[in-house]
Amino acid sequence: MTTKELLQSFTEYLQIERNYSAYTIVYYNQDIEEFVLFLGQQSIDHITKTTYVDVRLYLTELYNQKLARKTVARKISSLRSFFKFLMREDIVHDNPFALVSLPKKQTRIPQFLYEDELDKLFHVTDTTTPLGQRNQAILELLYATGIRVSECCKLQLGDIDFSIGTILVNGKGNKQRYVPFGSFASDALELYIHNGREELVKQASTSTNTLFVNFRGNPLTTRGVRLVLNELIEKSSLSVHISPHVLRHTFATHMLNEGADLRTVQELLGHNHLSSTQVYTHVTKDRLKNVYMTHHPRA
Image (cartoon, rainbow, N blue to C red):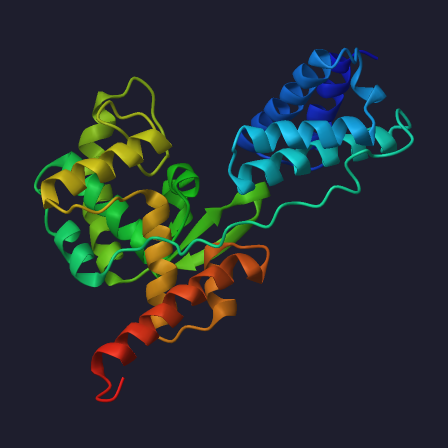
């Protein structure tokens, strides 16, 4: 089989057996194709001829490019998975990436917004207009639930249960979870659904059950949500960076600051591993230290 055919088989395996998202598969393919180009530069005509020496040379090339450790780790992980698949299919007998250790990721404190910054954001939207009602509903829901922007854009009208204040979220790998939302998000959603959304969908040529729509009445994209948030920042005159993920970080940080336990926040965020949620404890510890240093008489 040619390298192209092997990559196609691997893509089908990721789609069907592993149920990976299209976004993840694109990165897997890019990482493998870049490695194939590198092998060509080394006069190696087929990926199955890769040796551990070739892998070490490739790692040197990656480090010379001064790539972030996170990027290097992802590329190694992609290639390791690919060769593991080739071993499973009896196409190769060993995995040249098996002994390569992943570089330790840099620990970055997640960026989040303080309550006064959020308060400014919540008061800049003109909720007398359909788009204003939609934008307010997006902002309130993202902060109230901490859902990912992709999850937000996939929400359907039937996913919202106002009687008990929860939404059904379709997360990564098609895993579903229920996430509660509060009264502010509930009020914003009801206003949008019964007023603004009804006006917006009149512009569309086909009907849709997608919760958030654009000015043409069609489903709103993740890029559209980011543009909405950028517009709100400009109106609020805040100098901070904001994105859907910053609101997700803010949700998690505020929950932990107010005493929520880590397992609950993990479940609400849809994290598979507790380690993904633990990064937010660094934020709360830093906050506790700052409060102590500011207010203790002998700090």
